[in-house]
Length: 174
Image (cartoon, rainbow, N blue to C red):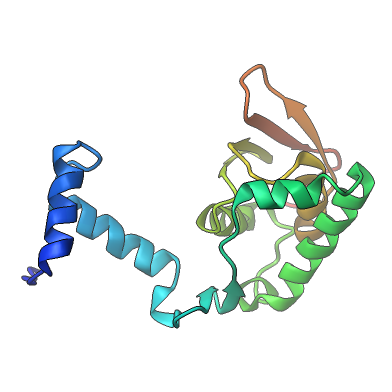
């Protein structure tokens, strides 16, 4: 399908700047990427000052702000908070109430949601989860995974900074 649109001059100047500075390959690529994010983030459901992703209201918060909050909590408190939020997400999200998140085959759906929310990059290898550039502290993620996947994990810290592998400590459901 082909679509032709007229862009406001300011938007066209911005796209040309991005193209010239090589932030984007071309204007078409930028528009297509923008539409992909529009779809992923469910921006059709956004209102001025109210953002929703997956039917739930979200707030865009600087990670330095989150870091300040997380520093006030002990590792045990972070784990407990993560577990509570993982259980809550599983119980309240309509996608997950229809899905058995204990099954490894369904984990990619959860991991993709976390990527869309900007938590980091999550890749599943067998039943192990490789995490890159996560903005949440490890104890929080351990609790969250235990809550949503109903499986305890242990972290394996790689020699590469910002990459952690989460390994289930009990048998997982295939």
